[in-house]
Length: 193
Image (cartoon, rainbow, N blue to C red; front, side):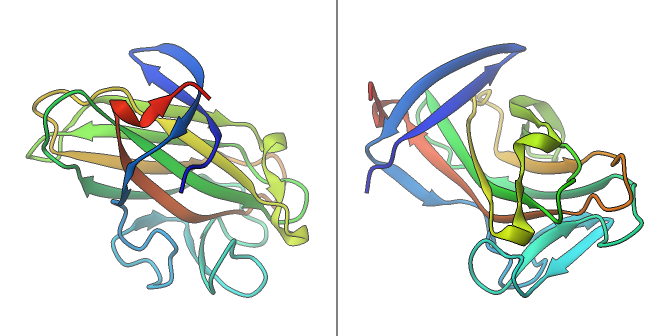
């Protein structure tokens, strides 16, 4: 099923914005992107699983920070093997974020290329999302973002998806992440739309 989105590709510090419509793409490479298996396959610092009204879909989501009196940074990441196919190839990251109450903290989302030893080879895509560009999850207002990577270097065998919640200005700066999808997008997937 085709869907419309606006994507931003980041390539060595240059930002290229374009509208695109994927016509055929590979399924989700992220394991447990909906957090229904709690934090399996994820590494988290200063966070945990949230339930109740807060998830975007399903029964669980990842919460970065704690609900009250916590201005510290928090992070969530997963290392993902990527298909080893003929180049060029690109990947699309789709994720949903929401704040709790009115004042979530800003978040930096990064996709990095990894070599066989797990070393970072470079940045595939990066987004800095300011706190006012994140919906109020307490009121059901989620914000959905799409990022498209640059081409991986030939020695890349994996990608690291990382969410970094920045230090908040006030005590309540809880951030919720849910339904994370990384899918391969062949160059033929993009048509003017």
